[in-house]
Length: 131
Image 1 (cartoon, rainbow, N blue to C red):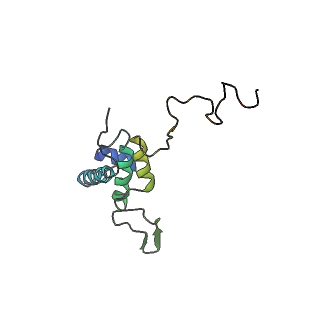
Image 2: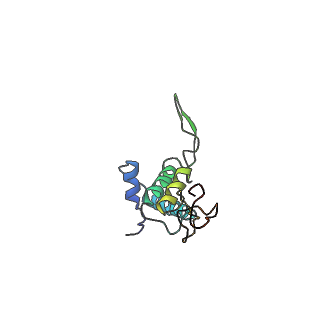
Image 3: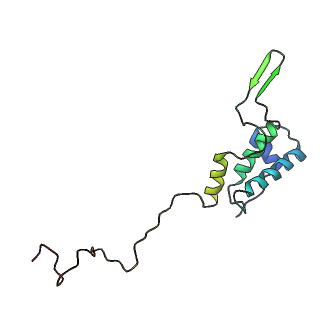
């Protein structure tokens, strides 16, 4: 099927917003895609979740504000909760979606190997101790 670029409406649904600034959302989605392509290119199926996640951080907190006071109310956000960036989990997800970054094994056994040990050498096809 291939990767499909999310729309501004998709970002609005992702953020549970009734209205969304379409031009701003489209720009952030495009920038988030470019950022994701620095990890994996072309973007794999399922990468829309990572693109929307990165774009949503930038949409909801563009200045990466961590502490804000308005009158008697104050809000403290987690460090790194705004701006356009990819988290370590985002990068891991992109690599996994592309089929990279997982564990693997390499079998160094030659194709012509037998299940019998080659040492000590056999004498007249008899194992030591069987004489």
